[in-house]
Length: 143
Image 1 (tube, one colour):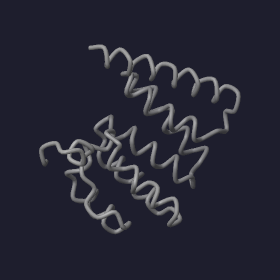
Image 2: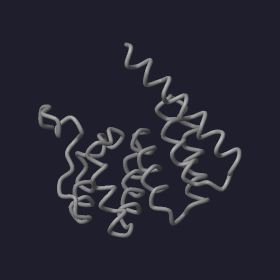
Image 3: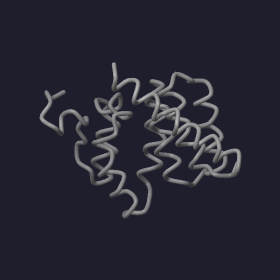
Image 4: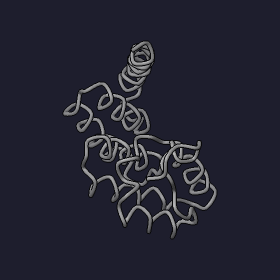
C-alpha cells in the first residue's frame, strides 16, 4: 500500500511539471507525450488520449513522442495504436533505436504488448531480439 502511495505522489509531481511545461511551452511535443502516459496511469484516460493526440500533431516526426504515445495507448489497452506508434519510434536513427531497445525490457507500460506477434517482430527487426517483460529479466517466472 505504501508503494502505491509513493507512486501516486511521484506521478502527481511529474504531472504538475508536465502541465507547467505545456503551459509555458505549448509547442513542446515531448511534454505532451510524456504527460499523456502519466495521466493514464492516474486514471485520467480521456485527458491522456487528448494529450497523446496533441503530442503527435505537434511532433509528427519525433521518435520519442511516438514511443511515449505508444506507452499511453498500451496502458489504455489500444494495442493496434500502440504498436503503430512503436513501429514509428523504432524507425529512428540507429543510436536512438539502440537506446529504446535497451529501455524497452524495463518499461512495464509495454507489458501488455509483449505477447503480440507484431511486437516481437518489430523488436527483432529493430535489432532487439525478443524483449521479455521486466519481471522476467530479474528472475521472475517466464511468460
